[in-house]
Length: 567
Image (cartoon, rainbow, N blue to C red):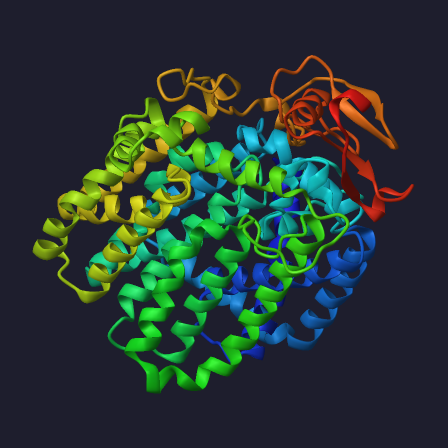
């Protein structure tokens, strides 16, 4: 916990410095500490993404980042110090109950971030993606080694910039830092609600109620967490400023949407929010178009370049087209298989059964999925059904209606791809809190509800709970709990204790996990790392094996087509 807290001090210092300069460059001045920190994370992510094209994100990067940090602070120290003073003053103005709540939540988040990683994707590709970035930067054809590495989320680039791997190997907690920012933002809005009585402040202020669910994802750099947090900030400014949107609020919404898309393309529905605002306020917002287009083009260019390097497909995970025939582009059959597997996972079915089902049968299959998936799917369906009633009766505003229809549009589009609850959780939480705000709106009731929720979160953090009632995945059957051994040093980046063995195939020498029955497991193995069972399965299915392009890992990989009888 102690090391995590110390690393967060530096991350916050960096985020505020770069956020201040970025906001100054685009003439943004919302005077929101959390927003400035997120703008700083965005700026560092863009810088790190550019750096990774040319080299590794290691001590060399941090020398440059540290120097920039120092120069920024020295140049603008009075303005930046004023930001901290204003933020401290805002914290002191919180009601005593909210001060206590925020203090407890902060400690719990740090404790959770120091605990055993829970997310199974952390074991398949989160750790490995960040290790490749730290040791080599963006590597050509990396997806040929492990198709999951084609994703290389912008959030993992951000995490690689703050993993400090050259100093200590167990920092893996940027999502926890982001959740803390989200909780600070929410608590501040709840405090404002106690004064102004505006329902949007109450709705956003309920975000800490979701901690009991979100905590399981923050001991690993899950890209879902920042998307949820950024979404709530977007929702707040969209609803609050819908009638009188100005350039600063609009710019913020656009940048948060761009950041979310760079992190996770399944956040595509958020694009409609700034589009609606722009069409509604065309004349007033037109002058912002050049500036925002420039930022958007930078993000798009980095997204395309990142994908072209790692997979050869410019818009991955869209694999229906490519721009250039690169020698390291992953084979079409491998790319299509990745896309199909992602789609099938949303329905927990096989390709054969999927093709035999009608659209209605797929819908019924989705609604009746077991355990947590089915629960969230049913809740979303219920929200779509009853949402109009609650909106019309209690929140009859155009802004809320727009968000409702965007949610419906997102669900329709997800049904064509992969309707996993993780992809629509931001809208699900928003409309759950909207309905909850109808019932729970008095100060005492809200305080009790937030306190009980935080107590439940602490209980789940400290007491092991079997999750058999919520999931069928045998790899995530127990909650991630805090152990007092991790008060100073955080738990390692992987939950696994498996060893690794050296395996050779063709010109590729790689590390394969020993005694692990998760097909896509790579864990924290030394690079290059790949489960030999996965390689064998892909070889039998596609007739391909990963090979080095040259004798250097930094030059990347390609897929060698090899008939089964020639291996």
